[in-house]
Each structure stands twice: as structure tokens, then as C-alpha cells.
Image (tube, rainbow, N blue to C red):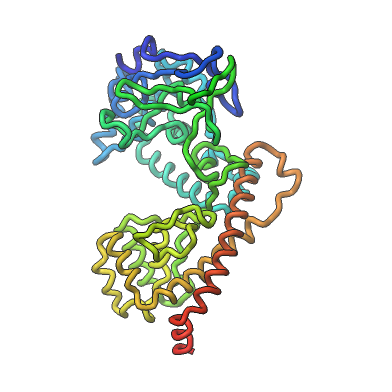
Length: 435
């Protein structure tokens, strides 16, 4: 049975969709325990099932996508189906489509003149949202003629909506089950489960489909909501993908751009480009996620990371690269980078730097300056009338407040690290020789 021939016996459900928060949630239909639902893999929305669709306009659009692009990411197959869902819903999906959000709930869809959008400034999320918007606009401009095969009135807002629906509802099956060749899947019905940090249910992926079941010793009465976990995501990610934040979320972070030391120096553009090329070649992120101290566990195989679990080991290596200079650490011709062909070789370079204590002290100072700027921005109090303006403002206010707490903790650690490293004999000797 293909995805468009009706749900029929391909799923079972002891629950119903009811209003919850700003959308819908899954609620028990009767007093229950154990298995709540089962969705056959044929009903899941993924590349393989979309390609089985019998809608000629969708198939023509997919063929044109495959002719026009050297490689079509599975995301575009799902988005193409979601655009069909929005414009000419297949009969089997009428009720499902009626319950889907009609507007983009994440900041990608917020009005740029709105208070909630402007409050994103200083959270790091403003950069991510602007970058995502620019990417979606450019992508739609390129693919619009292909999507118009599905429906002539498809517009940018439809494309952004489909992208939001995908990323807010899709699950990654990668490495979970080798019998599923596709990674991204939207699982109808189960995708209406809302998130909780204390979920009462979870899902299990089987060869034949996905089962939703209550946790052991959990018994729900009729019309109680069923919650799953979306994973241990920081508020910034929850807001960016799903459009909400959690007051009780202990996982908070803020994204900052790489602090190249050359930005503070004159005539250093060539060195920035050299570092940026290496970062790109090694597929390193140009954004660093700063967490509360202790978030990341220290690994014995890389003891160099002295930032007390605030950044990952990969981020730490990237940060060290950003603050390297040719004064002591690197030869003037920068030829040392020509031997870096992997993250492991970059890590080895860092571990063998002559003046690594000096480099780390420099990193602490630069990172402290960057964080001070974010603290100043996030410390600005919202006016009382703003706080209760709407739920979006409340979500951003939670994000800002939790990020401020995270950065204040991080700043304290950075100050202590600067004091500690400045007393090291190698640092004292270096400072005396260069005074």
C-alpha cells in the first residue's frame, strides 16, 4: 500500500488529536497503558514513499528536480510533498493536513518588525535566523519554476512553511535501523506528540513501522495528553526549530561567531582567509556554542580543553586556531597549515604548540571580551508591558534570561582561568621576556 491509498489498516491508534498549546497534541482516547499507536512504515513521509506518489504533477516536479540538480537532498522530496499537501491535499491526508500548523511557529516566520523578532538581537539566534532566511530565499528563487509544476501559485511563504513543517516534525532514522535507507521521516499521528522533559511515552522503530508506547508503570486516564522527548536540546534550538522555550530547561547555550584575533589587528586579512579556508576544508563550524560550565564532560584523550566543559573539544580546537599568531606559535610563512589535512592533525598541532599556555590565556581574554558584549545586550530589562505581550515574547524572554545566566557563569570561570594561567611559570617567563 502506498502512502496515498489511505491509512486504512496500516495504523492503529488508541488516542485522538485535541487542541494543545497553539496547535494540537495527542491525547488518550480511553484509560490506557502500554501501546498507544502503531504507524506502518508505508505511511511515513520520506523520500522513498514520496517517490511512490501517484500524483503526476508531483512526479513531474521530482523528475525536474533530479534533472536540474547534481544531487537532490531527501529534504527536497519531503518539502515537495508538503507543498502538494498544502495546495492539493491527497484524500488520505485531508484530516492530517487540517491539523497541521497553518503558520510558521519558529522565528523564521516572525514579522521582522515585531517585538519578539527584535528581542532576538544579542541571543545569537538572530544570526541563525537571518542566515536561514537568506538561504531559503535564494533556494526558492532557484527552484521556484520546478515547484510551480506542483501548483502555479506556490510562493516563498509556502516554501518556508514546508521547510518549517519538515524540521519541526521530522525524525532522523540514521543508524537506528539499517532496513530504512532514508534518514528523514515524518511519522503521521506520532508527530503530533508534544515535548516534555518528563515524558510519559516514547517511540520504538521496528522493521514494519513505529510504535508509540507509554513508559513502564505509566497509566493514563481518558483525555490525558501523551508527551515524548525531542531530545536534550537547548532553548535556542527548541525556539529555532519548534517555536518554544522551556523555563525549566537546564540545557542552555548561546551561539557566537568565531573570534579571529586578526579582527583586532591591522593588515591581517590574508591570515584570516588562511584560517577560514582551513576551517572550511576541515568542515568545522564557524559558530561556537557556549554552554554552562560542566556541560561537556572532559575526555582523557584530550586534556588540553581547559574551558571547564563550556565548549566541545572540536570547538576548543577551532577557538585555539582563531587566536594563533605568527609571533611565537607559527612560522612567518604559515606553511605549517599545509600539513593539516584532518581534525586529528590539527589537534596534534595544538597539543605541540610551543607557547600553548600563552595561547590559552589569550583565548580566555578574547572570549571574555566577546561574552561581555553579549552580557551587556542580554542584561537589558524588558519593559513590563512587553513581557505579557504574547507567548512569543515570553518564549524569547525565557531564552534571554537563561542565556544571561549561562554567560555570567561562563564569565566567572574565564576570570578564574585568566588568574590561574597568568601565574604559570611559562607565562611569567614569556611576559618578562617581552616586556
